[in-house]
Structure formats: structure tokens, C-alpha cells
Amino acid sequence: ACSGKDTMSSSPSSKAPSSSVASSAGTAALPTKDRAGNDITVPKTVNKIISMAPATTQLLCDLGLQDKIIAIDTNSKAYASGIGKELPEFDMMTPDAEAMIALKPDIVFVSGISSVGGTDPFKALKDVGVCVADIPSSSSIEDVKKDVRFTADCLGKSKEAEALLETMQNEIDAIAAIGKTITDKKSVLFEIAAAPSIYSFGKNTFLQEMLEIIGAENILADQESWVSVTEEAAVGANPDVILTNVNYIEDPVGEIKGRSGWENVNAVKDGQVYVIDNGASSLPNQHIVDALKQMAKAIYPQQYAGITDPFAQS
Image (cartoon, rainbow, N blue to C red; front, top):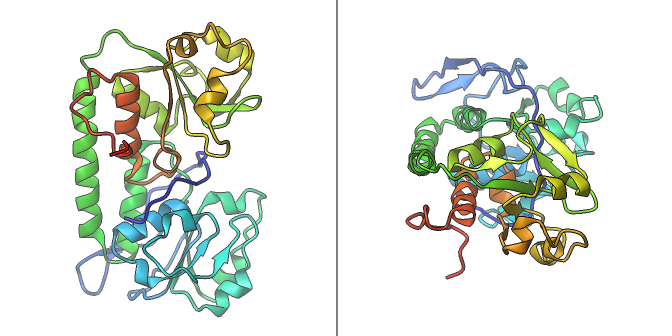
């Protein structure tokens, strides 16, 4: 797999089911709508791919398609150790559509992040007939699975994707079986941005689902989606465990433990503050299960003693 530790956090967007028709070879299904519900025409043969989302780039590598990637977004390089180092890179927020057209891609995978301003930066590509497939960031584990299937179906890798998803689901089921036995539930704050501008999540996010699977309780479970949190509110909630996937400061655990006024928070007082891999916990693809394992062992080390932390130092 092409993997790394630096990325940007995802935010949820609306999804539409992907329609598909059988390919001429009869071995796969070519979607007729992308994950945003837009009509698309996927080429029967895809040899040149541009990936404008780190989650997609990582999945393409896992599907063995790194040799077909001809360009990536600037955030994908942390996950692209298995592809050419000299690939052109495009900014997700201000992509150069004309330069992409010059590369003559067969398909361009994009995310909703690129269209945050309300305009379509890929219109020029669509106007010349390039297939642009939009995959908005998922808000549920089920949508993550649909994203994986959609991407694979576009590229004739449906069987390989099902193998990845079967492994993913088996690992989720194993953790969920343990999670259902946990009655003494710990309260958790999961920071995806550090103080003074703490950012976290509530319901209708895949990370909330993951905490529920583990058997833990999110202190922000009554909030909707991705939320800003004041230090006063966080301290007042007094979480038993604090998780952080912040990767832009040198010692995020030390930063939390050293905050003024946090010394009586249970998680800080008891030393229950842990780093969770940023990529696995923020890229909506099959690797969220790696974050799930790491989170489970951090919150309930005894109950999940038989689960391997994929990021543990050997």
C-alpha cells in the first residue's frame, strides 16, 4: 500500500447512489453516475488517471494501479511512495484544468473539497470530454465502502475492491463483537485540531460510528457533524480519554497535557491521552479500519489486547 502520515481532515458532503451498466467485457460495472450524483461516461479502457484526493490515491495504489496515475494533488504525495516521484502535482483548491487537459487523462477523480467555493474548477475538463468523477467526503462507514466500490468499478477492479472490503468488514466485526461486551463506557474527546481552535466531530460522521463500534462514548455525540469546541466546553465535559490526530505540531500529546486549566481533566490527570494516525483516521477509504484498531487499543487496552495496533513501533 502507498501510505503516509500527513494529510488533511475530511468533512462530510451529500452523496448520491452510483448507477452502473455492465461493461462490454462483462467483467465489471461501469458507473453512469459519480458519487455526487452527476452523470458520467467512464471510458471502457482507462490508462491515464489523475487523482485529486489523497484517499483515492491511496486506494488506487492498493488496487495496483499506481502505474496508471499520471498526476496527483499536492496532498497525495505522502501516500504515493509506490508511484513515480516526478508526477505533476495540482493544488486541490486551485487546480490548473488546462494543464490537466494537456496530460490527456482518461479519468480524473476529484473530491468536494475542490469545489468549496461553489464553482466547478474542472468544467474545462468536462467541456473537452474528460470523465471527471466526483467523490464527496463520506460521512459514514457504509458510504466509505460505496466510494471504494465506485472507484474500483470505474477501473475494472471490482473483484479486488471486494477483497479489500471483505477484510475491512471482518476486522470491524471482530472489534464490534468486543465493543458490545463493554458496559463501563469511557467518554472520549477526539481532537482533529488543537487548542485554541479545537475541532472535533459529533454524530453523522464515520469517526462517531467508529467510537460506537469500539464501545466508547463521544462527549460531542449530541452535536452534528464536524464542530468547533471551546476549551471551556471540553474541560467541562471531563473526558476519560483524549485522542488526537493532529499532525501539524511536534508533540500533540504533550501540548494537551500541558494546557493550563486542563490538569484536573480525567484524561490528563490519568495520562489517557493518545495520538491516532492522521491518515488512517481522516482519509475515507478502507484504511479507516487501521485507525479503528489503534483507537480501540488506546481506549480499552485490556479488552482489545488481542487486536494488533498497525502503527505500534516494533
